[in-house]
Length: 112
Length: 112
Image 1: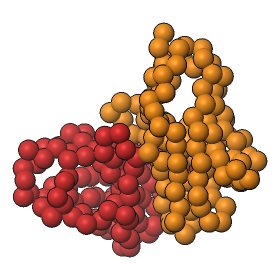
Image 2: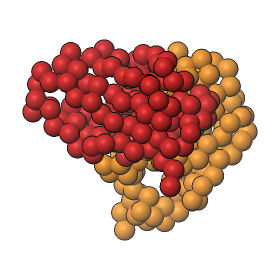
Image 3: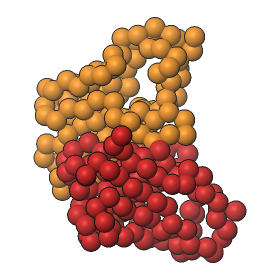
Image 4: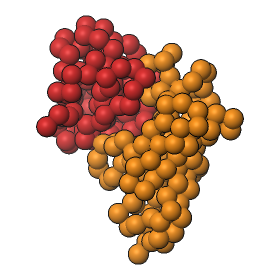
């Protein structure tokens, strides 16, 4: 079946450091890929998405590229801020499944 | 403003009681979903519905029930058969099954 694997957290960085959160997936066909962000006590917000191979999703300084050859969708940001502290979820959509499949989430802590 | 509204934000239930969580959307989305989130874990799919008067079980449907009588509403009932109901419950909707999902703010259910 479909699955999403994320690097375990927490990831602790200093402000202005470079961020990478790894995400790999297993799926049949050609799923769309997503990154969501969750702040404490809240629901999930869509951060970015990519719908086909080699697409790059970007938003608020975050980027991720859909790599079919490595089945990956790593999240990157060049310079993190304290306000980026949250839990980040990688997800995929699968027409056969008809609902998003999520990774376990990666907590990011950014220190001033 | 368009969005998804979950109520209540916090809910306490005594063991042996059924409780219903509300989810309403005004995005005119066809598909709606219920996920469960436990501390430090990803989201697990409980039920989903692609059209009115139709819904399917997800990965952890036991002890839960849903209805979809209206396009904008998808209430979730946590029954006494659910052995460990304390969790954070998230409702979501999407325009179509392959598209990104939009989430409500969640309901935190605690069994006392």
